[in-house]
Image (cartoon, rainbow, N blue to C red; front, side, top):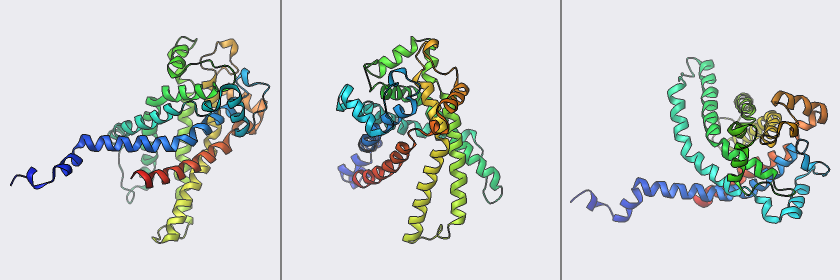
Length: 308
């Protein structure tokens, strides 16, 4: 009897690499569609909260809460615009799924490995550096989509400037900064990622040492590890949030003429934000971001139960 004859044909089809890839891709798509549905609306509101001082068309509006922003979006452009950019969010998740293997392959080739029992400091630094390199590679590849996503979010109030993502790219490339405008604020984004990764690992390791139940395999140990992970993520997001605010403001003015811009560069943006808005200006939209993080965790848990 042949090997092929010893297995049902349906099993052979299921084991085919292409079939597995299609099923995995379909699962990622459905999972992203569920997770991004609430987070898209939150992201749109957060971008407007972060950049309201930098966009002249938002001046004069009292937009201090997500609910106020959604109400204004519905008034100006209709309820569907609350979720403007949703297809891009789903697309980003799917593209990232394909980029991850390449990013990890680059990391393995460049970043040396160390034994934590023999040289913990080098192991720790290489872990942070490797993760940062992976994240930077993915951000570089996804930056055009991220830029379009932000511009569409900021275009949900008042009269529309862009018909869609392609129109954003077209008008930005024709603008004063050319194609470089798409990567406006990218250096700040890389610093933000570094701050996040360092703070995340440092806080997590610290709390793991303090937590007496870290290595317990019972329900209490599982709960404390989940709580620690969520707390560390929220704390790290808070620490790096000022960089995100500056990044968004730089993206908001990327396709504008020099006379229309509020900030010369990222340093000038930091200075003026502090001078004009105070420390609070660096944390506009933070509550929205933290709520999105918690909501995404819940949505991922639900989708994992439904699609895995």
